[in-house]
Image 1: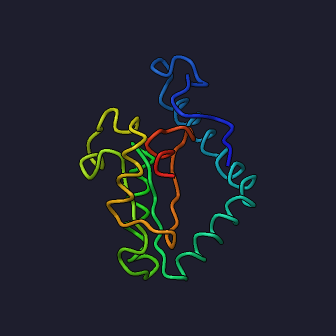
Image 2: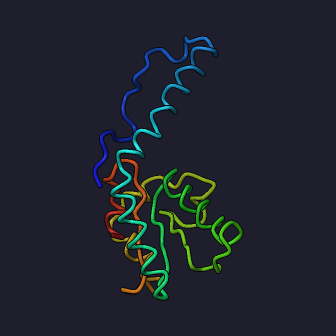
Length: 149
């Protein structure tokens, strides 16, 4: 799946520090409105991903999210909410974040740059060909995530 924008780019808005609060809020809201359109364009790719992941899970496999930084934290939140929200067993949906559990609440600088550690963390979780791995990286280029995939 390709992405049109990558993270950590210069802002589309200049002088955020000088904008009135109301203008900041309007600009944030305008950016938020672009999300549904981006999702709409990606529905065919998302459909393929969901079908492939659910096939693995229904055949006894597990789902793993692998990410770093904010992307990894979002995977942790989603995985932790699957059992109470959808009634799936604990351990069916898992999240692995670069830098380990400490990285959930504290930035672990440079953990995302270690390509080998992404795969090593999956091996520690006894990954097999029955399982399905989703890499979460806003930029699409995070070495830790690419190494896991």
